[in-house]
Image (cartoon, rainbow, N blue to C red):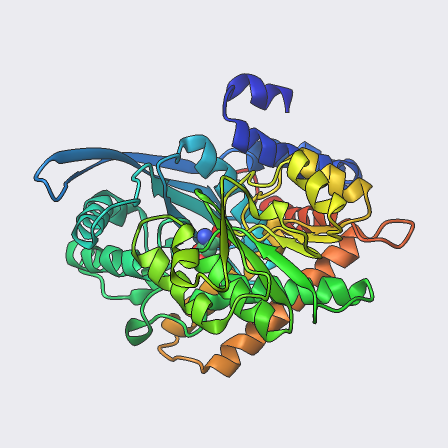
Length: 441
Ligand code: GLU
């Protein structure tokens, strides 16, 4: 850790993600001298390679814009590189390195053969027109196409990249590469190789995981109050499944504040989240404007200020601080499942764990998204498409298996489960074993 800090000073998200994993695996690692001999940790924390490229495009006013694009191929020990693309103004190599590192362990947990990768750009979709989004995606793919392939590296969506962007990216890939295998990207449209339920999968999987976690603790989700953050694809899927399971989603949020929904979100409101996302306005206040009798907008506040049983961060890394954790617990919250990648700051996780709050980390909770991407790759490779029931039951099985792995590696002497340790050790052991068997490369 000290060596890494000296080598990459200022890469705070990356160092935070690595530290969490190394702290979790320390005891197990020390029981395996063969890992140390092969310098598994030193090799695992460095990405295999990083592509960085200029992306130049023309906006609606005719002005030339330049952004930076990246693809970080992190680890291929258990399969081809796999992971999303993030378009957000704050994207840096540190952010994508943390995401690629996390993705490696997350993908290992899914039980599917996928390595870890992440990519994206500092392009800010906020306020952009559909034409601008398309031209940016085309310019981005002009460089990316040479780095990817269905058996090589398969990007997908993440923050700022949904079905529309994947469509534009694939269109340009086809034109440049003259390859027509849709398996090169996942999260595609339903008529051209996309898996049914992929849009819902991250949120659905997170709720299946939460259900298993609650069941293991002798509790039930029905009737519980839930606060979500964000209103994008992940919060949308989580709202649908939480409501189906009988919980009440009483808060969603955006960069502008929180919407308090005392009686719980309705299907009509959930559908409206898609309209809000497509508008590129990035404002949750629009929900309260559209449904004034159901939702109350509180400017500048987070979802964590609303009293709930269960908190589900669904937006961005480090979105839940130690102060937020204290406020949640003071208001009666007893469970937090991280749906966003590294959504909780380390202080928040420690506060939850020291105060008896059931806590599970993003790499376990949100793995249903990439798992369903893996199922999309399988369908593409075998030229078939499964029904919603087939995909849903496979997703459910995968989330159950991830929960079991966490329990296996995270059960403490007092019988409680440390899900952070469990997820990190389970993912690490699988990747480390594969690296060991493949020699020093
Ligand atoms: N961006 C998602 C994640 O963080 C999904 C990646 C994928 O489907 O490849 O896991």
